[in-house]
Length: 73
Image (tube, rainbow, N blue to C red):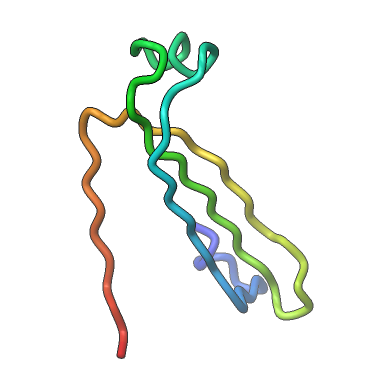
């Protein structure tokens, strides 16, 4: 959706994936046991001047994680 905005320029986009365990609040929200595996993802997109234009911190249940990416040489 961001790439479809006509005047928006994305200079860098980065994603970090961390496999961790669910704390009390996370386990309650996701309906999983405390210390169950989770994937924590942080996405940051910046404009040409370094301004953050998108930031997301998401926690996914660990009972199914599918990761797919294009690797460019």
